[in-house]
Image (tube, rainbow, N blue to C red):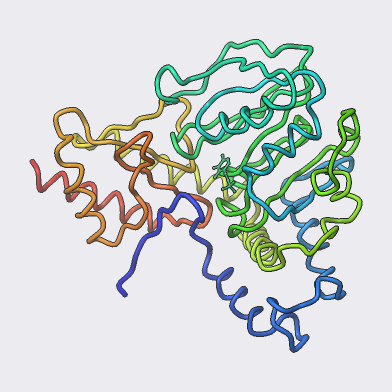
Length: 357
Ligand SMILES: *Cc1c(COP(=O)(O)O)cnc(C)c1O
């Protein structure tokens, strides 16, 4: 197979070191003679990995002392429910910035009053709403920091008068975050910190225990904090891939270094989209995501869409088809994608333009 450049939106590309480490551990885990896939999660070798993984989270994101990190076997979609179950007593506020934000909001609706403070649905979620008011009587305000499907991103840690809860599935570990501004940060592992099968949640410990409803054991975040994410059998493989991915981020120099790289990668691709007469970006310039770069054929060139898809595929580009709700193309350039990958796509766009001049 000739060289490919993977731009999948999730599960994402992972660094070679992570793939090698995971392969090795499947053969034999930590000198135990046992495969990672058969290891007992009650061994000290595994408990050590759990502890190190938590420590890496804390170190990389400078998580304050009064927070804990838990790993849950599920998806971010399940965490939408965790949020509402554990925090919604009377009323919650949500910012509607796309499909995922909306799904999060929908889960809360069954459990209390939900106010949608602002929405960018009017222009197919191509921008981040601004200038809205967060109701001061809400139990929490929920945001989706990166809108994977539409390629928009909230680049700053917002100030909120009520506890701030963020789905950071697709931009976690892509930039430094001021964790102290959030009550809970959560997401699925498969966009930037590993593979599917587990999720993470960074939780301010004293924020829990304030709802009056009955919480089933597995849905009670306090249980997972108390049991150090091992109330039941944890998704050992996914957590191990997360551990290796975090170690890789640390070896790169941490999230600050990663962020600088991400900015350069994204800027180079957006520059080509803006320069190239055949293509146009879909997201408002100031809200453009560093992770998911969405673009379509420029007006007058729409008929070339399928041809570019084939052309790019033949040049080794994988996963650049846009989500059906936006159309066109989406290049997901998470932490593990390299400038070389991005340059290959840029080169492809340039050559395609040459062909059609
Ligand atoms: C992918 C994604 C989800 C859903 O994740 P699952 O793990 O598939 O449930 C939720 N939110 C955002 C922002 C995503 O990108």
